[in-house]
Amino acid sequence: MKDRGLRTFVTVLAGLAVIYFGATGHRESGGEGGGISGGVVLLALLASLLAWHLTRPGPAK
Image (cartoon, rainbow, N blue to C red; front, side):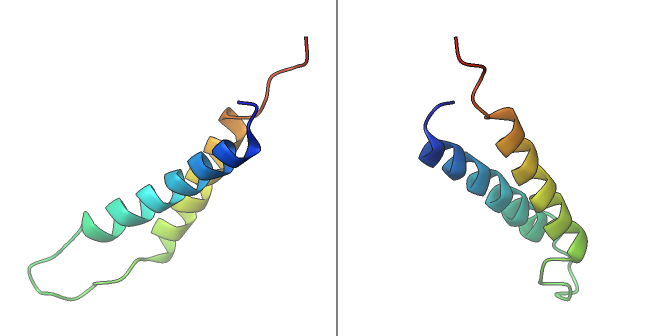
């Protein structure tokens, strides 16, 4: 991926997707635990770093 803006967008989107699904995916019937845990933040960071790594530009030809 050559466009750095698009690469940054994909990276941020990956992190936000993990945070969104992590915050909404484990709703309990008791109503407590309505925030995001440190584990979800760590997974979001790892997903963002993975997206950044996978979308790096290839070698110049």
